Image (cartoon, rainbow, N blue to C red; front, side, top):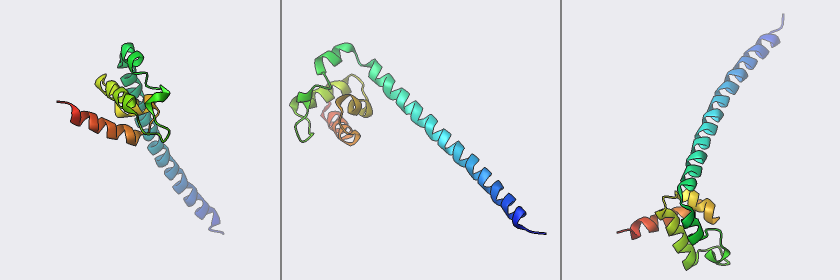
Length: 113
């Protein structure tokens, strides 16, 4: 009698349990990310159309050739933050990095009276 079948069954059981655990972890991450995306989309939908028309977040003059924001870009990102945009929404709308949007958000918060 060989113990190979018992070893295979034990390994299979271990793999099945591990796969279920990982699937639950991945599903939880997907749910968290979906909620984050929905919150960001809600943040973008709340911004009035007049702010989009005035700020024009995707206008090419808002960024220099090296990717930094120009004065009009700074004013634009501040207008978005005043309209209750999150840093992630501002980054998406302005096509800048989230790191940069977070830095601008901190500057905007410190400049408020």
